[in-house]
Length: 277
Image (tube, rainbow, N blue to C red; front, side, top):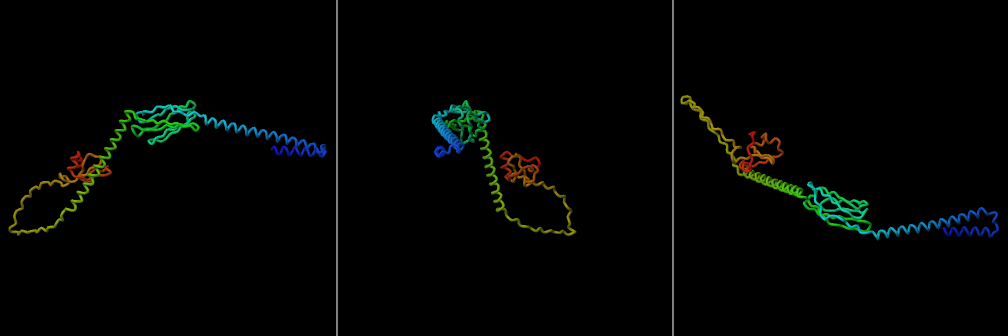
């Protein structure tokens, strides 16, 4: 812009020197106006550049002079009866605050003008959980380690849950072991069982002369069902308390699975006979 100003000024001087002032008066005036405008524009641009530099310097200076955002918070927070924990504290206004732990999902917020913050952590999975609060303002940071502890009621709930899971796992393992033993015993019985030989009975037809009078048949005693003998096999379910001699018993209609075991084993475990049999 300065170069353009000097060029326009030289053109105006050249025209005056050639004594063509009257003919070129409008042109000279136009050149002078353009030169003045160029000079003003150059001055304004220079002032804007200087103003921008001052703003940048102030911003950098403000960043350097930021006070570290100290955290004012408790070291331990107790849960409610359902395990929820509310973390509260205070730090610098407009600071970025986040809480992190390996036991729950991290959360992040920006504080208001008063610098207060609060996080709601859903039901913790253990009686005690460690976490860290981080705060950042500009290029300054701070952090604080805290612990989240379940109250007595929630600790009992967690202990009962752990015990129930242990018992369920133990029962499942025991049932699988017994089922495997029954299957192995059945395989052994099939291998040892001898083959049955068929015998042909000879029928003797008595002569007509010596034909005796038929004697009344004695009532035969009712044989004990082999399925109900003490050493026989019965069927049980994982959830029921009855044993069944028949795999097609009505008591097994609503069961998804059944286990085949010895009758004496079922009775020793507290199972009783199904009322449908």
